[in-house]
Image 1 (cartoon, rainbow, N blue to C red):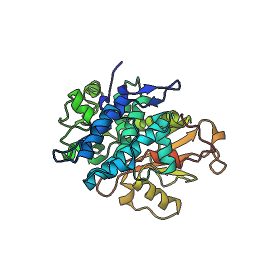
Image 2: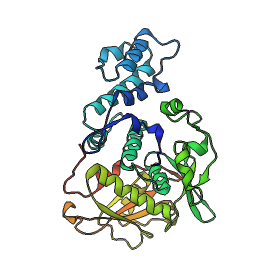
Image 3: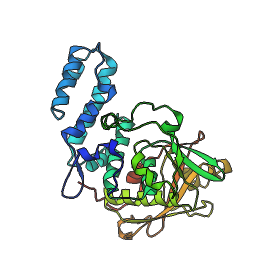
Image 4: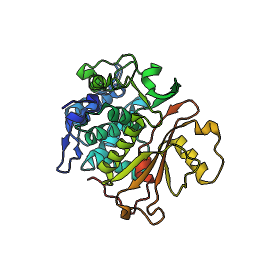
Length: 335
């Protein structure tokens, strides 16, 4: 079986009887090993003591007074964020349940980086055993910002940090621990090089062809279906959809901020300019295999999913919108 995404920490976690991810000391230590939490040479005694004890016992309770005693304001804030996030993970039986709680109750001050890391490892669990590089690369859109461009008539999606050169350091402490290569050229994923994805999956250095009616766009729809089945126990059929002009928008979900904005305008009957339509990266129709789980307003009509880039050609997918935006009569969450 081919492995992938070693840097997400999947192999450091346990699993419950239902297949959910159970937090471990080893997994939590990754957060305390982050460079943002490594005390600098001039760190105060309180910060050094807190860091040292949590590396030894990452589940131990931390009082507000311990963080309050840290002299540096930025360091105090970093510790407040990470301890609140850790406490959320420990308060739920699985990482899946913790993610659902964060999304449904509001992520509050949880850094988006932490949410993306949860999505990363949960998707690694949901896709365990997958050997389709197109599905795996499409799944990266769930937790990695993309930059889109049109080249020779194709809509290409590349990792924003990789092409911008803003991430010269390893993407996580685990990358450093594993000695993974992090600098590489960008290649467009194809049938010819798909096998190489598994050796380089933690580099995020393969571009994806999202052109309508091509394999990668359909692959993203498959990942969305897997995500919903894994987290909510909901079985859906998702198909790429080419044109929004004649769609009867009974219900829609924007898969990012720009997709939501465009959907709002279509819902209100406003004219969507050609320049706005050109920002749409993918459209899908979603149908519930069991129509009884949908609310009365939707019935057996499709839900439209809209994914779009912003004016700067940047795409930041928000998979949480699928959790909060679907017209479900009830939710069967993984616990």
